[in-house]
Image 1 (spheres, rainbow, N blue to C red):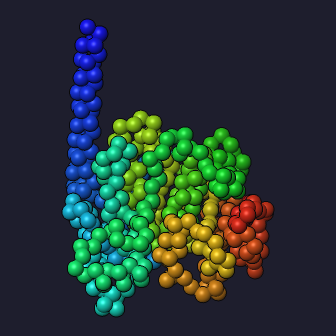
Image 2 (tube, helix red, strand yellow; image 1 turned 90 degrees about the vertical axis):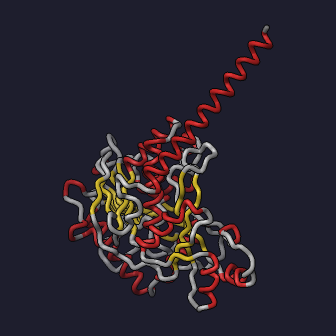
Image 3 (spheres, rainbow, N blue to C red; image 1 turned 120 degrees about the horizontal axis):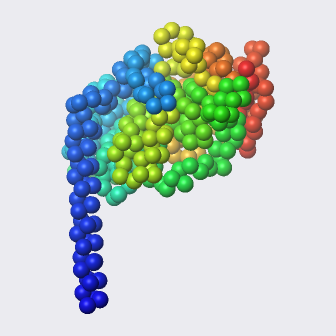
Length: 394
């Protein structure tokens, strides 16, 4: 009798599990069709360059048009996905950014035509909810090395795929599939950043609410993410490169989906909190000091953070993969040292004109402060083993 009851219970649990799994798959499929791929109701999918400024007041996410602050890198293309369901997404990206959409054979042929691409945007399957089902997609950046092209030219008869590249594509993920406790724990390497910026301390030392922060050099958004998780009230990421902005925009899109549809309550609440804090602006940081992009006086940030691309290293040291890709993606647009110094000084002046409480500038450990020839000098510095953070108190 006991064994029969146990058997019936196990059968009921199997039926319940199948029902839940079927419901999750159905919900994910419906979400993809109505919100992600077609997105006919909201018309928001991949307006990277036109709906580019997001204002955050704690929960709202209104958009305003912005100018294109930097032309798209001519050595970047969009690769057709290995999966047909992502073809339209790839086409939308290429159309919005105005860059070529290539198949793998076309990419190989481009090398023979002396048209060199060193990066490609690709659309990858993505498991949004961490349930083992690729219910969404992620826009990733794929490095293209010369060894890849040589190998592709020798494999004309072979069906090429993304897996044949030497390096794997990288995408930005603001809510990776980790436990909430892991997501809320900042790594020791980020502790100095938090110490320098003090995201929990608002203007004039107000500790009752977090700081409003502008990150004028967002990059892949990892510092902004750390500051948002470390207690900031709001963090605005400012990025001028269209390709990097596209990656950030897609990460925000996936974070919004998690914040509204994730079946895991803890992860949904975590994503909702982050989505309410992080906003994104496509602009050159110096443009925020004047014109229509300048915030009103009552919405100026407490803190402005600057982390510019460092000059090439003279020492051989391991660099994280995402930073390698970011450096190589922007390396073709690097200017002379004189031009770089002028840009750094202009950005620092912009930061000072915006910040109400303090400006934080990340620098190599032994590098001179930004704008040494001007009157503004750091109030103090937070020093690490390879970098330091210069803090300017207003």
